[in-house]
Amino acid sequence: MKRIIGILLALTILWTATALAAEALPPGLTEVWNEAANGAMGQTITFETPDGRTHAFILTQDGWGLYGYVLEDGQWRGSMSGWAMEGYQDLFFERHSPQTLRPDGTPYPDDLGFDLVSAGSGARLSYQYEAPYFQICGWYDPEHYAGKVMVRGTCLEYYAPGETQPEAVVDAQEMLLDWITFFDQHPATPERARELSALLERNVAGRFEGYTLLSCWHASQSTDAVYARLTGTTLEVKRALFAPGGAITQEIDLMPLPLSQALSQRLAGASLEALLSDGSLTDDFYLEDGALDTGRIPVTDSVVEADLQAQGLILLTQDAQGARKVSVVTYDEAQDRYVLQAQTPSLPQRASLDTAHSTENELIVNLGNHAVSYRGCADGLWRMDWDMGSSESGSFSYAVSYCGIEMSNSESEEQKRSIGSFGMLLLNDLNPDALPNSAEQARALVDATGWAAVNNPDPADRLHLRAAANREAESLGKFYNGTPVQVLERQGDWARVNVGVDGLEGWMMASYLAFGEDANQVAPAFPQLIYREERETCGAYRQKDLKEPVSLDAGSGGYAVVGVVDDELYILLTDLGDVGYVPQEWMWEGNG
Image 1 (cartoon, one colour):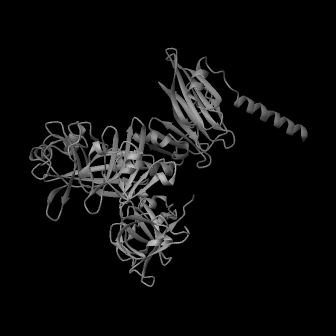
Image 2 (cartoon, one colour; image 1 turned 30 degrees about the vertical axis):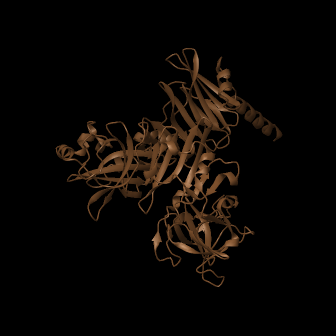
Image 3 (cartoon, helix red, strand yellow; image 1 turned 180 degrees about the horizontal axis):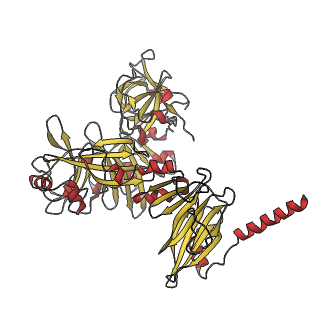
């Protein structure tokens, strides 16, 4: 028995030594690796390809990273980098050979390929040379699927154990790289691949009758699609977000666009599909000169950029002298008219819109040394949301709320928060020359006059907001330290204050408030709570009787839990000053 164990142990050691044997690294690559500072080098494997190039792959010593290099014209350059196989560190290289059989029972055509193999689980990820690079050609993931997967072209073929004919073939088409880039996110089973195939362009194109698909953007687990249809001289645009399986998780009708007579006649003579396919139109074709009906859209200067949203059309325009403006046009459906809701003063010619990073009801203006974000509020005003600036002294950024600013990357709480009225708030007042060029200048633009913060000596205690200036009056809620309030008047020991901007008004004992600049020294004691997953889309209620629902954009993270009512409700306060009430059971501490 001891002899058998010894033989097995010897064979195990021999196999491990063979599998993990390190190949000699080609000359010059060590220096390139060390200069890149990618960490400690682990195993390596090299290949000579028919085009005369040398390819080398390196596993980091910790097992997480896989790096590829190619030698061309005597110079090494990187060809790939990233995770090796997410979730696995016990990896080694195994070289392909013409005797290595693929899942369909056929041998590899040559030895220009390798597997990354997990020594413990047996999971493997296969690469094969397809000029000019090595590509993922299959995988084995026994934790999720007993069979093996082969990548052929853009198709994923699923082979059950012992079978050489696939039990399922799913064409990933344009999403192939999204599906196979990360090992822990690949469609391990045929069922998962079919769910993801519902996100393909071909499968979302016809989801809305009468609409033409204009654009389609894929993430690994979702698809964001934009559609349009022409109704008379009005272009109607729809945006939809799809989840695996094809369920629509979000559907938004964007503001209808009035088109010029010339463009309407042009579109009437050809289908949107035909004009899109021959390149005559793009998904932003309504920006062409003369495309919009300027008799209805109150903007006459040349359109440089635009961002169509549900609540309005954001335009960057330029006049004959080169001066630019950002305008927000909204549609009054009741009166069937378009309204200029907001507009900047003249901006320098370098001004541009960042439509790639803006979200719904947001616009971002790039001004060279500043990128400034504005959000549309319920009262029709567009208020600054954040500013990222840079100067010779370095870069800085701060978030803006109705009650002041909060600096990013500040050294202390005292430097981070400035409560008060910020002097650069509205889009209509945007002045690039007046924007701050440092964190100190940003803080100096905050006027603390008439502001205070709840400041209990015991941070665990909370301060009542009373309906009248006496201790026996009805409590409208109890508020945590750090809650900002705007002081309306003082009467002896009491201060009449506003919490937020939408009418939560009452009286607080002045001795438990820190006024003016002293408010910035109060450490907020807000509980760090988030919505439970099943409540994320519920929003809140405008009043504590929970009869009038209100959307607080709860998923954006732009709110704080500032108070409680009878230990049954939480009071939420958003960055825009909106107040909402939610049952306490809707929220929790999260998973850390």
